[in-house]
Length: 174
Image 1 (cartoon, helix red, strand yellow):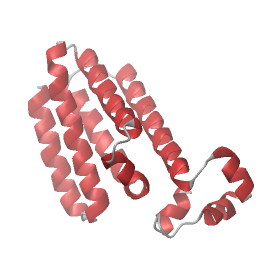
Image 2: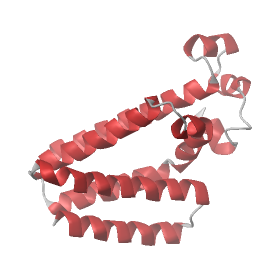
Image 3: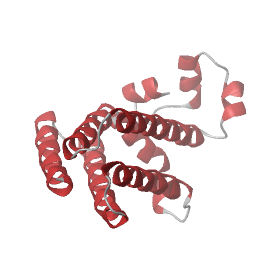
Image 4: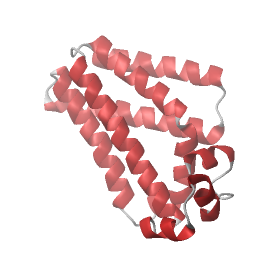
């Protein structure tokens, strides 16, 4: 599905297209997912699970310093930049659910970012009161990535925005 979404828009991708690329029947697809949107939600959750694993691995293998925190945010921005198509697909698929009354995905993403802030706060040895500052940095990063995904921000501009964001991280964690 991800490969098909990279070449075609979410709206132009049918379940049949996904099944052809995956080499499965439509029946097999519907045994696992009720809808195409439900499949996208699982892609989203899988992406965040992998992201959480990479963050955990980084924290376990690096000493907690402001420079290491800066590197973690830099790597996170680079990783997000590589997955802009998935960000766009996700919001095309379930954007209405996110802005609507359903809290399932909002809670999932919020919990993910809160956990990330908590882990960073503990790793850096900061008091609990500093968690909100780290959460704000994570929210800024998320907003930048969403902007990139929807407005086709040119690479040169993304680079400058990343540098400006990392300068903010540096000031906040030093």
